[in-house]
Length: 380
Image (cartoon, rainbow, N blue to C red):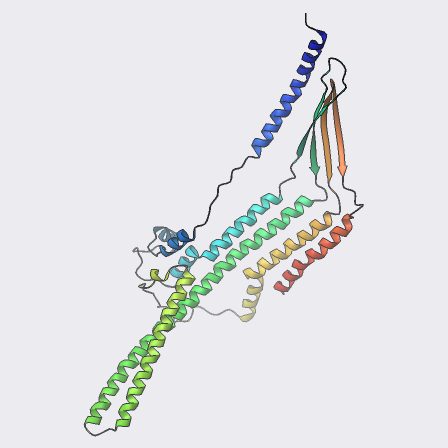
């Protein structure tokens, strides 16, 4: 026959074992649901430099990219590259555009983060009693939850602000793409002008050499003076110096075009460019100036990005006003104490006593107005 004390402890253990298993299972599931692993992706300057130097216009992925935008080449590698082809190359290789796309992805991820609700928390309690009745386990075991409840539409304000910033980042991608095109077009024009100038100067050098030869023949025949011969020589030397400067400028323009394309200089050193349409005016009639102004005010990407940032600043302002209304924390809990099951439900709310919420929000409101004024000035 078992002793009374042993029977009481066994019964107590059976009573506790059920809640302990449920709590342990819930705790393990909570940990597993939040598991995430970190995968480092270190940057290597040497590998980045090698990858940049390996870029070329023979890349098969570049051919597929051109085909996706309706510029399917008949022969690969292409023999001649015009402005539209080079703009697509820059959009494919531009590091600045890659950075702006990454920022857009971060802004889109921030929308998901802003829409997340606050995580509940759980706490565990264990107390040992030095004085306990005979046959009763001298422990108090329990757990409690903290369930935060946001009020005054704070979550919606955060989501709207994040969506506005995501729109601003998307417009910034388009603005960066346009700036890439501007840089490529400017570099293409500079290179074309430098090459044409060098061609004209080469023709002038050939003509001046012929003139110098004729002047020397006239001087030998006694029909010209040494001053005329020296003048022809000086003119030839000046033209040769101007030609050397033009060729150096053409090399600089080629390097600037390579930078705008996001390619190493060696990738376009021997490239053949198609300047066929560079000296022809654009086809069609030019719209009136008022139409152009209206289109610029409505469709300029930098203005649309500034308006999106203004909307995000307004949402931040709304969020700061909503923070005047404190959140509520519900605290349900369970406690087992000397054979007694105790359930509890608590309510917690922040009291604006030592640090009034209204004064805190007023300071934050003044800080939130700064980006609004900056956005207004950008849109003005």
